[in-house]
Amino acid sequence: MNQKECPSCAMMINKNDKVCPICNYEYPQQNRLYQIIAIILVVIFILSYVF
Image (cartoon, rainbow, N blue to C red; front, side, top):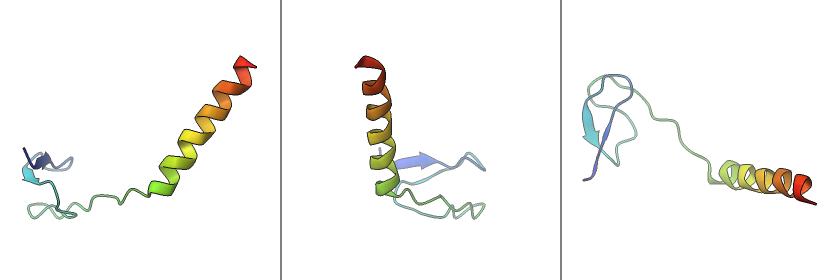
């Protein structure tokens, strides 16, 4: 299944599309660096309570 639902108009569109062709909703680009930093901060936060 290589489709996803548009959060704006609820239509199924191609998974690789960055913009919905129906309502022109633009999907936000996820920055991998922010995800890695968030995971590191969560691990540090958890470790600070363990030790």
